[in-house]
Amino acid sequence: MDIFCWNVRGFNDKIKRCGFRKWFRLNKPIFGGLLETHVSSIKAVSIINRVFPSWHYDCNYEFSDLGKIWLLWHPSVSVSVIHKSLQSITCKVKLPFVSAEFVVTLVYGSNCRKVRRELWSELCYLSTSPSIAQAPWTVLGDFNQILDPSEHSSASAASSSRGMRDFLNCSISSALSDLPFCGNTFTWSNKQGASVVAKKLDRILVNDMWLSSFPNALGVFGDPGISDHSPCCVFLDTSRPKLKHPFKFFSMLNANPEFKVIISECWKSLPFQGTSMRRVSKKLKELKSIIRTFSKDNYFGIEKRVTEAFEELSHCQHALLSRPSPQAGLNERKAYEKWPLLAKAEESFFQQRSHVNWLGKGDSSTSFYHRYVKARAAQNQILFLQDVHGNVIDTKEGIMNMVLDYYENFLGGPSLLSTSTFDELSQLLQFRCSLSVVDLLQAPILNTDIQEVSSLCQTTSPRVLTVIRPSSSLPTGKQWVQT
Image 1 (cartoon, one colour):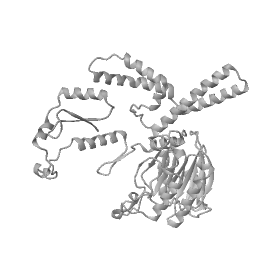
Image 2 (tube, one colour):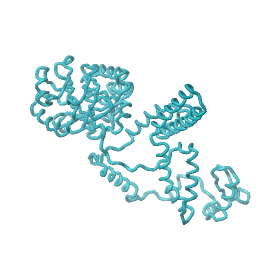
Image 3 (cartoon, one colour):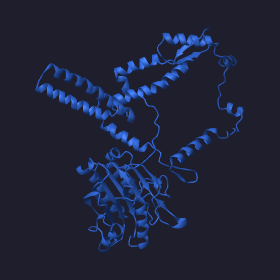
Image 4 (cartoon, helix red, strand yellow):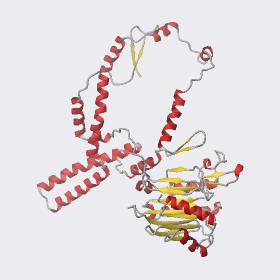
């Protein structure tokens, strides 16, 4: 675990501190925060030193006497606080094993909706700050507000409160979205037995730069244990088993003149026996490895290649304008021909990856494509499923077996016989074909029919052709109608 944030109300309780120490030793975080400790500023120092020996800390006691937020970090972590308020602490963080510096905002939202509006305004302001707008940013903690009606265990599916709308507008304005997570769906409960109410009050929000810098980051909401809130945990680089990705053909390969030559030569040189369809299938299978190798050799790390090609072009242009010579001219021309080919391939690659088709072909900026691809990659995954009994399945094998069982039952289960009779169904359509038309429609397709369609397709434009058999209302002979 890399980052944690946990609402442990009443950290004065020795039993809670003992339970937290066990959780702390098990998960070994090096940076995080505690919320709603209710520890006075006088006792805070001694308690922090006992629970977090040799750790550094910062708090927002200047805004609250109850210890709303404790910011804690190991000495190996570099932390610089850039903003404090009653409901949040924002800081820049540099972990020892992570090259990129990022920004973390710990949040403890007020129970009062009007006071929470100040938190929404703070987050919107911070999102436009130069030190945050261009940096990976995560906002995590207890927001004391749900974002969707489904995040309340007893709320109506159609209900929407003013607080929810304020939170939604804040997340949109700040360009923040939920980090992909697993664990508990609801993060808080009132612990009232049969009258229990559960809500998702704790969240882990991130911006686009975070998704780009930490594409494998994962949030985990653990079991509350000593608290009524689940701990918010962030793993920056999850160790997931390598999946076998399906073969994908990128259209940028078609723009490479060498690609067509290689495919043509390989297609003609692959000897396979059998029917025409079998030969085609075998050749396509063999071409997969050839296409992968060609794509890797020519376009692997396309972004880096485009940058290097442009730097090489700039260098050649500078050399040409400084000391013109035939060789400098040839180098500049060669570099100029190389760079646009790679730039167009990069644009085509990200456009196909992001499934964005509404931008004009003349718009060569790929920043939007980068953002969309990262967002899709973060969302396009199944981290856990819930079965019919409410159990959460979060292992790879469990998810695969659950999906397999579902479709086996759905597609291969017992068929239900219809209680409707043929006469009842026939009453739904008033039209009836004549007996001659019925005989005509049921007549088998002959080989001569297929041959005539094939010969006609070779002499007409490639459209879908429908054969209409002769009837009493049509002239003799087959009529071919383009549809």
